[in-house]
Length: 381
Image (tube, rainbow, N blue to C red; front, side, top):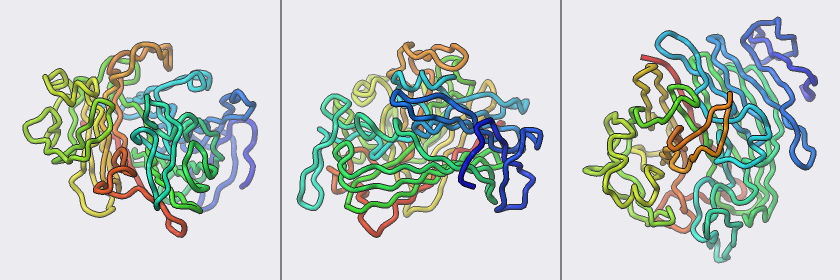
């Protein structure tokens, strides 16, 4: 299938696996619907795809930035509510935002001073976070309009997004061809598969920057959420939030989330690292070996009973608790997003890895394939 109808359409979930066709919404609630979502400033059409599983869980993704606009999850009464921050209309995203729900790249997180040396050559990147390069630069993957294709697979409803990052874009070497596949399963999982190839050696570090509030988006802060991270160590940072290169034990620090702990329990502790980030904004070194898909973190919201488990093939996860949300973003349903009203668990390689040879490598070379997977699983208890 190469073209989508202009009106909203649904892909029937009752089809034989591997076969797809277009039908009206009367085919049932489970499926994939597409609708126009507006245009960018340069006139590019943007669409919104809504994936719905057999339980009624919905995930809406726009082709602008591959942004997760909506994600519903069940509470103890099996009521589904939207648990990610974002905007009702494209204009909110175009006006500038703190990466709500976006695919970030070519390099997620920070590269110090926007410089790195690869194979004896120094590269200078676009800087957009003081003197540092953050989340791919001034025009990262969060601002691209991605090509999209929906399908029904054995795993569930899928949305495949593709884009090309040109050689030299934002200062990065190599033509990078990227594919991101969102899959919504009937186990209430959102699976994200990232793949990429390049024609020149380049650093790459892709992730999703969704802000979660399991009590429901726009309902207040996330300090009562109980967080568990399977990490004995984290990467401490300097005042510019650049890792120092140390892998520091979490034992005896406010960064010990090896047992479920309320996010707000120690966030105001007299700790230099918390002061640097204005709270938590740090990479955790996961207790894993190899690239197997393993449980990295879980979050429990006591009032609703909602639980989110995060599985990943990546070696790290950035825990960010919305320290820079300041009420300037008016989100879905007119909700104002204030200080710490959302949290991110960004699966990743470590920040500034191109300048830290002891960190796991983020260099992709011609003939290799970049491949990572992250799964967000939702349920209630």
